[in-house]
View 1 (cartoon, rainbow over the protein chains, first blue to last red):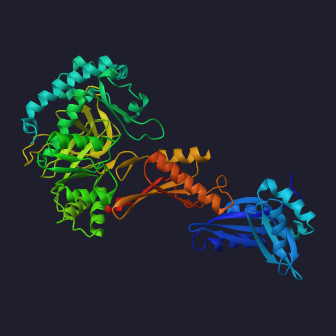
View 2: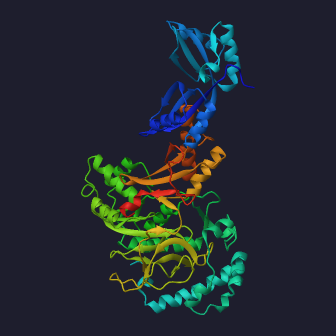
View 3: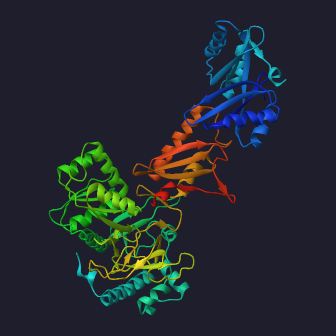
Length: 147
Length: 433
């Protein structure tokens, strides 16, 4: 059963080849998908583009038919004050709960807030979410991204 | 010349072939159910062989037949007569196993002695044997040949290039036995080490085989080491190296008193006349443990019977330029696409789309396998993908015995034609290899 704070993230496999990112972004634009958050990881040969978009289903369909390899995963997002120690507070809770962070990325939200996105091992997501809740940090509901 | 039979009149050789062919046909017919069935299907009995012309009525044997009778199903002697077993690296299924009796070993030494005698190798020569020792027939085949003619053999085997160069120099090696690509690699390393391969070594001749070599590569090798280039041709199913050898005039003579060659149309099986290109087929007529009737080598070549200035009367063949199926020879090692596919399937439980790319890096072949990352194997993490790549590379090394570089690519990167993916891109072909 999906956690109510689980946000759908799309990971796209990309070869490090000129023009590939252009094609992904054009595919999304043509499907009128709005990218809400993104991060890019790369090795020498290939990269992974991770996106949170306003309509994951539609994005997925558009990318699949565009020939991209995609994987859909659950992540969660928290909102913290945009000031020193904001990130620390969240990481500390996860560390104390013995939850390994696969990766994380962030963007600046509205009015002095920052939104942090976390990917943790799938089976640990409910535990992570409840630890965050108990730690008094605000979780961001998926609807924030999807609208 | 090692043996006068090599320059005997044609009639004498043919009489010997016929007598031996009859014996071999009787032997396999009565001792191996597989051959009896095939002969019966073809409607011929060993007793009906009256001339060499009748050879074309006998059934073909294929590599698949050898595999189907793994390991010893086609042997015609009990195991207490077998003194040696060799095996080729297998494809997805079983490896090919070959056996030798004491007599077969003598035949092998004999034909290898003839090979070495192409350049008058003998007592006083120091022979650095860089063919791999082991299940591969190359190492031991040359070892016995060099020993038989009285040369001092240095069983260097493959690899350890710098040390091998040092020993070649210090021992004053006069003969080098190697795959062409390794010999060229050695020359490059020698230069890097500050040697002049042409003058700092005592080499006078090299025996090269186990992989196709273009005229350009031969010339380059001859020139790099300032040596005579002698080609050695063979395959383990027939005996190993020693099936044919190049004379100083560059003609690759088949030792046809032991191995009768034919060239056939690979599609129809029809025997082609001298001078026409087709698939090479061998019938062994002196082997005991594993005689083989009309073995389809899948090597494409032509046979010639013109007189040769070296005096040998035995037919000669063109250097083999390609195989009639999709087998690749990479640095002397046989590689089948099916082996690569096997690894992918075994590792992931699925068969992703892939392509094999063979190219030259310097003088050595390099093999790359491009694997399409589809939804089944796409793990969301660089670490996981790098790990997948590493595992595939390790497994391919275990399976293929060569280093493979795996590259993960996006789907649809790989060209598909008529629904069937092109599995092999051999960039070496551009250089005439």
